[in-house]
Image (cartoon, rainbow, N blue to C red; front, side, top):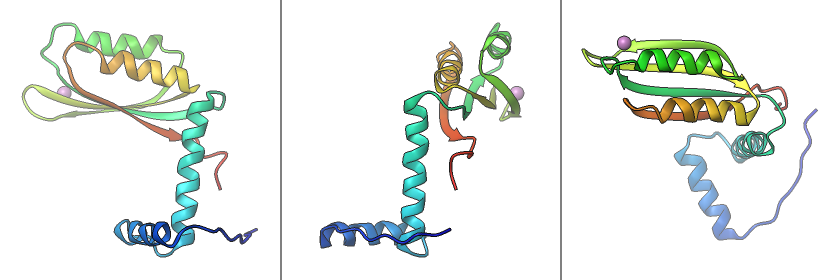
Length: 137
Ligand code: NI
């Protein structure tokens, strides 16, 4: 079921929002507002820390670094978050890119990401905070 609601805001803020909408390619205000609400709800899931979330960890590292591959593997095996899948790309002679998708409590997924991205030899690491989607419509 779809419900309609109205909101009041200053003309300048609405004009700024409309520019945002066109920059980001939204068809209309409703679609933009729906996405912003979902983004806020996912951020809140991560903040509240109770519901299960999904995180995507991206790492770029030099695979010649002694022991680094072992460490990356061990951390994933020992994490209380469950690793769903990993993808490995050999970027060039030295550099590898790895994507690790994990689900669990926010603190577990964040700890997994922190342990991996802080490893010596990891040149670049990030966590994308995603959701199981269960609480979003
Ligand atoms: Ni590689």
